[in-house]
Structure formats: structure tokens, C-alpha cells
Picture (cartoon, rainbow, N blue to C red):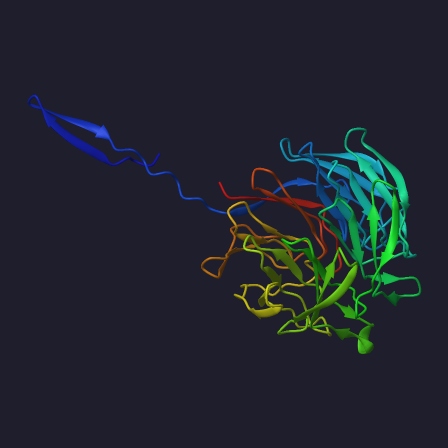
Length: 368
């Protein structure tokens, strides 16, 4: 046990020794493995439920192939239980928690580009059909709008077609209808709802291999007009990156890769919606890509970047500086999925390695 400093008090001819109050221990942010999925997976989803549990759905199995299995992780007990199966196997889908607590699972790929939608109800633990998208898509984004509807943007569709289309789903009617298209076709882009309710779409790519074009442009969706407008350009064209809304209303763009996927970025950029401009942000220690949806703004406004490297990193936005978090992953897992817990912890699940092996690991970030 660490000894405590002593204070001496003289009085009445004697010496009294009192322990001085100990300083509170310094917080040490760390990541450690806490549990194991029943099935190794990547390109899946992890969604915090109102019950405090995390819904883990679908994805790509170790060695390839899409999964239908669903699991529930309980952070309070570090337990994982099977929770049934999706109506269709799917990877590259999206999962959106609706205002009523249900989770909307949309699209994905299982050999076909899926248009089907499913709803998970935590009250019953059941998955039920919830209509269809106007267009089958995988690798798209899903953004909850201020009115409770869900905006789906881009991705890849039937015939390996890159999509510029967008649509809005209404949970009340279980119908999805097309809205105005983007100016460019995009996959591996990001979509971030801004403070004013608009949705900022950044980067991404269209085409494959030698025909691939990685975008530097950004567009913004305006719900009132149901149209996209220009929103400036990145300093570095990138795809397979991440983006989060900062408390001051700006958007932090994180990592990504170039057209070859051989150059991964440690750089970040910051978009100001008021001016429609991007400026350089602080650089990370580790280069990262295939990280969409795995960065979290913590309750104290720091940004936690969890995946794509062998260690997580924390950004102090005020000081514009990253620091590596204690605890290492066995590999730089890509296409993991995370869920932010109410107490400020973050759960990191699955992903695959450079050797294309999916992991069943569940890790937990703590800072207390």
C-alpha cells in the first residue's frame, strides 16, 4: 500500500501525527478485452439499446460469407447471449436506433444487394419485417433525421452499381421514398447530421481498382428541400474514413485511405458548416482506414478513435492533440463496430485483420 504523507500538529506538550488527505488517483484511459462474441464477425453493427444492452447483428463471418445471427452483449455482466436471426443474412448493412427504442436494420449484401428492412424490438426481443428500401444497397449510410425518419445515402446496388441516390424511410408508415440524388456516386463515404438538422456527406469513392475515383468533395442534404447542395472539398481525397460531430457544431474527419488502399491516413480535417470549408486537424499516431462509425465523442467532448490501429487514441479537441490509449489490440482490426454506453465507456466489437481473419473479441474503453 502506498504510504500517505503525514502532517504534524503540536499542542498540549505532545506531537500528533495525522494523515493528510490523499490526492485522487489520476484517470488512466485504457482499453481491455472483457468478453467474447459467440461468432467472430466484421462489417456488422453494434447498437446500444434502452435496456443498456448492445445489439450485435449480422456481418461477415471469419473466412467470408454473410451472417444472419444476432447477439446481445450485457455490459453490466460481461455476458453474451444469442438473440435469434435476421430474416436475411447481411453484411455492410446499417442499424439505426429509432426514437421509440427499436432498431432499424437496412440493406446489406449476401451475394445480392438487399432492399429489405427489419425492426428489432427490445421489448419483445423479436425481429420483424419492416418494408423495403426503394433501391437495394450495401455500404450506404443511414442517418436519423430530427423528425424521426431515416435518410439512406449512396452505397452499391444491383450489378455492382455505385449509387448517387438517396431515400427517406418513415417508421410510422414503414415506407421509403426517393429524394434528390447526390451530385456524385459514393460508397465508403460518411454522413453526419449537423446541429441544424442538415446531413453532411463527405468523400467516398466510385468505381473499382484501376477505374476507382476517390472523392474530395462534400455535399449537404437539406431535409426541407429534400435536395443535396455543395459543401466544399477536403484537403485530401479520402474514403473508408470516419466523421463525428463536435460539440461546437464542426465536423471532424478522421483517417481513411487513397485509391490504392495502400496509403492509409493518420491525418484529420475539420469542416466548418458555417463557411463550408475544411482545414487541417491534428494527426493521429496510427494510420487508420475502414473505420466508419467507430469513433465516439465522449461526454467530456474528447474524441475516442477506436479501430483501424493496434491501439485506440483520444483527441483533446481544445489542445488539438491525440494521445494513445493504454492497452493494445492483437491486430489493427478493420470494419469493427462500437457502441457508446451511458456511463461514458465504449464497447468495441469484432473486425477483421490484415490476414482477413475476423475476431470475436469484445473490448471496453474506460476512463475512470
